[in-house]
Amino acid sequence: MTRAKPEPVQVIKQRRDGALKALLSGVPYIQYLDIQFDRRGDELTAILPFDEKLIGNPTLPALHGGVTAAFLEVAAIIELSWSILWEEMEAGQLDPAGIAERPLRLPKTIDFTVDYLRTGLPRDAYARARVNRSGRRYASVHVEAWQDNRARLFAQGTGHFLMPEGGE
Image 1 (tube, rainbow, N blue to C red):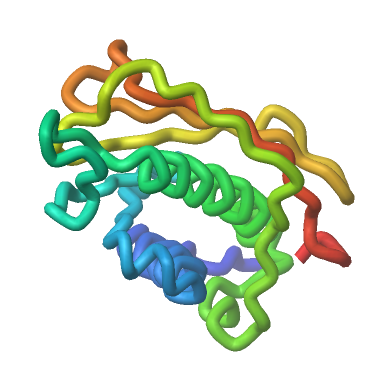
Image 2: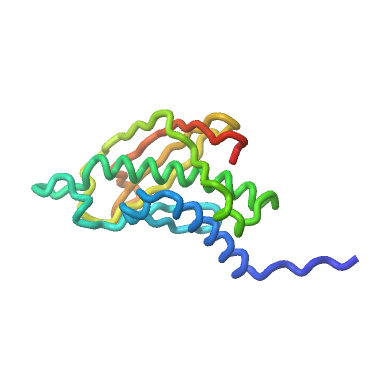
């Protein structure tokens, strides 16, 4: 019995990047804020490139608190959705090419709490989320955001989410 030859790494990477792109393209607000995601394996880093429209207080200048909260919430929802998709792709239950065809079903926010730790400066921001608990009906996610120094957070948040029916 001969073993099937494994796929080239580049093909797998392209498929996973395509799956992430399909997930992100279903949320128009991500495009409006120009939030991008850097994928390294199963780890995602959200990137909010600076733009003048993001300034809430031009006197300081400082990022708008609503933009900061939205950035954290988007990072949490995408991380939670990606962790579900990743498990399905790794288990062979989901072909990454088929993600664009299936209806987008994101977790719904039950509550989201933001701690503003310092002023968001007029520069790029980064965020990473960690899924604390994920079950069939409910999930809890913590997210942290920083700008120049990962050790100096400017905001963090914790969210609770209602999972889509059927675990999709």
